[in-house]
Length: 311
Ligand code: SAM
Image (cartoon, rainbow, N blue to C red; front, side):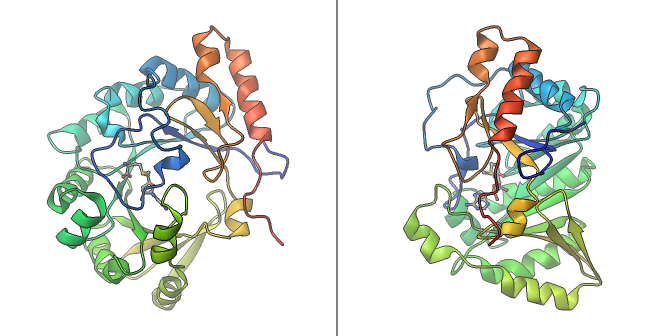
């Protein structure tokens, strides 16, 4: 069974933000749509609370979960969170999105052993200066994170590149070559306006049409992901490139199958909005039973609606 919203869209994916803390300072970061510093002093969801929410979700057919943040690896108990979720019967997919900086020192393998199957690593540039300017971090450490993720046998390893006008758009060919050479999938992501400021967005947003035209010409096959925003995957002779184009894209919204949980425990139906959140953590802390928590998911699901409507 799965929950379906008022527009007939099934709810299949949940992005769980487990912290707002981060060891990078990405200029373009949307912080998963959370209001800036709103919950800096708030208590984090505990391992047990996260696993309980995940269990309720999986029981409702929301069986593809992603851990995000902030930087999920800032939490020392990430392996426990992964192990707890990975053990849930009926789970279909568990992945992590990370900047990769803390995957070294055996952490990648540890997470793999705990049941994590795949990772997305943010890599906006292969130029050390551009990478540092954009993220505040060191490229060599992020590349080591990619290397250890590949060695730990995550499948697939995906690289997330938010493409920015006048910053890293010229790095796309290098990233495609690197993805092909290392056997990872590259995701080209259009900049979302969320939390970045109007000026930054006006200066750096760029449609990915040009990149898609280039990919279409080179592709051997093109695949569509119907349960993931109808995103296109371009299979080039030597590399696989996925394109994420959310902006003013009604097709993207019509094929959205996801919900989020904020780091302070609120069900969030849409990245773009904060006026329709449903608190699930407070009821948990007040002793709500599983049926009551399911009801909260059902309620939040009915608040889902396409942000960009088809005209
Ligand atoms: N710290 C982790 C990381 O760097 O991947 C997880 C959090 S980050 C918010 C999750 C993903 O959101 C990253 O893959 C990043 O590329 C993407 N992202 C961040 N800001 C974005 C924006 N303004 N538009 C589109 N994607 C964005």
